[in-house]
Amino acid sequence: PQCGTHSELAKRYGIDVVIALDASRSMLAKDIKPSRIERAKLELSELLDRLKGDRVGIVVFAGDAFTQCPLTSDYAAAKMFLKAIDTASMPVQGTNLARALEESKELLLQAERGAKARAIVLLTDGEDTSGAGLGDEVEQLAGLGIRVLSVGIGSATGEPIPELDRRGNFVGYKKDRD
Image 1 (tube, rainbow, N blue to C red):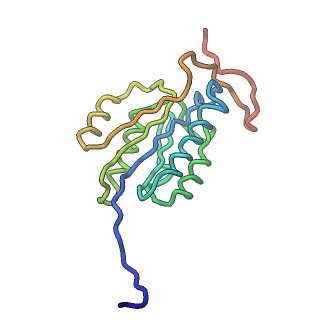
Image 2: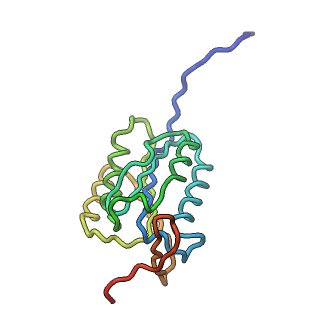
Image 3: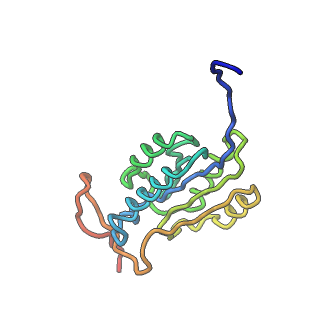
């Protein structure tokens, strides 16, 4: 028989997941309620509630990409970073999927080893406006054993992109020459 307690460091080996979330203005479209970006954030919040022992990071992208949240197993912190994502804070508009995957790859490669698997969950409304190196980036990720799971947000019919003023009030729809 033994009595008492002691602490022991236990290593957990889950998966490393980077969520790459499109925060371009087209994600403000309301064909998915309440909007594409808000629906994506709600779904990601539910995903975070289901994770156990895995590390998650968040990359936000539009015309460029940056790390919003480094890899962490602190899901409450990840949710806080997720809630702070806003299309108005993106300095470069457009949708550059290759840059999003590149930033996500860097985040995974900089992490400590130990994950059983690595994956990128790419959430976007789908249109890559940059046309730069997407195929090459996907091949590199496959060679590194990093899975890419693409999730489309939006309807097949599409939706006009709302224009908002500085206060977030609706002022019209985005238009081109035609």
